[in-house]
Length: 71
Picture 1 (cartoon, rainbow, N blue to C red):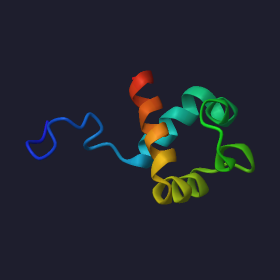
Picture 2: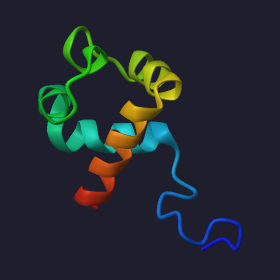
Picture 3: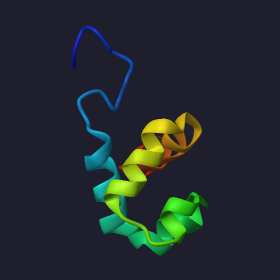
């Protein structure tokens, strides 16, 4: 673990990796049930979801929290 961020369990993980793993586990429908945002419900794609998550801190925080509980 890096000395720069010793308390960050997601240090070194890319958002794309986290999203891809959650989609492969739960599918888009399952992800939309857990985090109800439009980018997971209507015409979901990795690209559009990443764009939304990078601009919306609360949604990214929910996605990261889901990933940590599933890990």
